[in-house]
Image 1: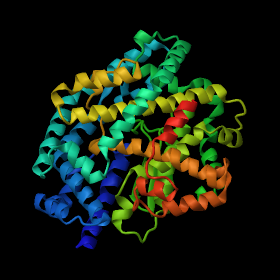
Image 2: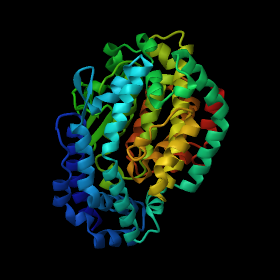
Image 3: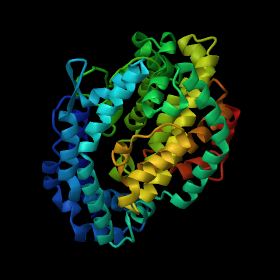
Image 4: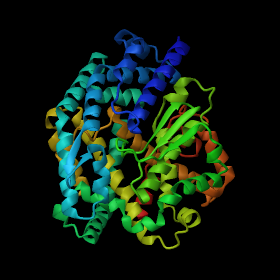
Amino acid sequence: MVEEFERDIEAFTQEETREVYLVGAGLKEELELAPIYERYAHLFSLDGVKRTLDQAIDKRTRYIAEFLTLGYLENKVKSLTEQIINAMLRATVEWDGEEVPYMNLPILIANEARMEKRHGLDELRREVTATANPERGERWENLHSEAEGLGFPNYVTLCDQLRGLNLAWLSKQMQTLLDETQEVYFSHLGFFLDSMGVPEADATTADIAHLFRAPQFDTFFPQEEMISSLVNTLAGVGIDLYQQGNLELDTEPRPLKSPRAFCAPIRVPEEVKLVIKPQGGREDYESLFHEAGHAEHFVNTRADLPTAFRRMGDNSVTEGYAFLLAYLMINRRWLSRILGVEDGREYLRLALFNKLYFLRRYASKLLYEQELHTDLAGAERRYVSILGENLGVKIGPEYYLDDVDDAFYVAQYLRAWIFEVQMHRYLEERFGYLWFTSPEAGRYLVSLWQQGQEFTVDELAVDMGYDGLEIEPLLEELASF
């Protein structure tokens, strides 16, 4: 029975992931999920999902129950999902006498040096985003209702229990992080806004986007050397990227391509796509390395593992591997060896602030999303309040539903952030500070990647000698900044 489920889940996931890849890569104009769900409707019947939940007795069956339950929920709202995504893919705005795709606005905002024009572009983006909020709200109402129909008290409990998120513990850790980093965060925020000539009272998230675009450091991150820097880094740990025929890098800047880099594991480990839309500078490198962390995980996963361990499980694991490679961007030894950056102090100050900003942003989102899924009616006000208070810039209220991933993926990012610091400390202690030049460290990482996601980040941390997920190493890193 389990094997039959997994066979059909594998086929469904391949089709769904390929569809998402084609649209996200700008190779297809519209997302068509409904036909795929219709072909696999037997996986997502109410009785079948309830039976699977009741029979989840071990890790493998729990992973299957989680997958089918979340798939059941998405099946109920698939038409709204398509409607929202396709509306944003079709949307354009008029700017400087030209029709500009909505999907390109984040790149234009990040690259715009003039504050007034940045704010104008962001206003256009907010206006378009808001047009789909009625559908987004309806979608969340339906998901909340369906969660209760499955016998859970609410959507929050469903996600917490199925995904093993431990939201109460994680929320407490994130509040501690917000409290302990408040002083260092706001002192640096003021410094960087002043360096851009942006009054603190006028600062918005659009200004933060331009700050992190950091064109003054483009000489450190030449676009023509981006791929070679990844190739050389992987070679340092004994991995030849060009010999990995199951991995394809897609770096073409198509108009409809998602501005958000992503990895599409269509067939694990046989066919994996790494998709990035270059916009220039440090963020391109960080996005490429982040998605390469996912890609190396998936292409090295053992093909003989059951689908539940290749496809499902704790996504904090793959996000942890992604952060591990991405945060080489804040490793001064890597900067020197791979990019030849000898004096990167000013860059590192900004890069560390970037990490601190996103940690505070996602910590705030975790607190906000629990309120969102309790009271949709008051969510817009709470979104602006919570994120604005913790980030110190104006928050566009129009994003209050768009800035939310399904099933508390925000929690999986945060768990991965905690795990990544524990992992790179372990690598440094076992293989030295130059672990990224050690083939032995590479063999160790491959041994982790081969396991897919059978084990959670909590279990992997224990294997590395910790008591489990521990936030103290992350707080120590931020305090040293």
